[in-house]
Length: 259
Image (cartoon, rainbow, N blue to C red; front, side, top):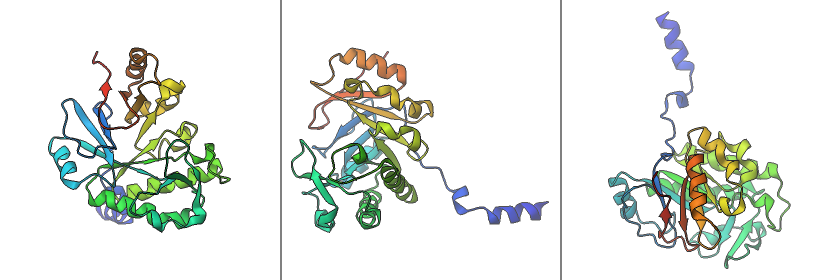
């Protein structure tokens, strides 16, 4: 019997013995600061989100030392022309302007093989900076005017590829918005970051993540959400962590009152 067990162990993939990817805690306070990379530990906050390119390792180290979990943001579905790797993207994969965000344009995510080196380099940077997780943005181009004929299946393949590449590096990964893809991507992603779901009345779409014990970070913007108290009441009932902040995402936010 012992010989048979030993043989079975040898046949199992190494992944069977690997530690599971640790997603962010579902019940911790959340702070996001993309335009101000010098985020300091804050009382009552357990999860911090910073810009991948701008965050400095000493800042991340300090957040870790205070017991924080660090999520690093980058845009996966659009090209921001100020990024250090912007010149590496072939011109023919760059599409329409991202409305409202100067210098940002949609990417043709159907070109997964061409985009893979840049995306993987960004994930490698997240590992180098000791991020715990990544939040790749704009992974819903199929439902936007990108200039490309991107299908839902194209988007699912791209997003799953990102998740696999992150997990291969022991990084957790969050699904950003993409309400139409929640059911298909629930098992591939470790948490979700959503914007303006109360203002758009789509928060219920993301409840499967909370039902699975995964963190849901809900960002509402001042001037968009009419009744913050009502939004908080709903977020708490759904087991979401909600904050009210500004479009600058500078770390200045208020969370829901504790009940």
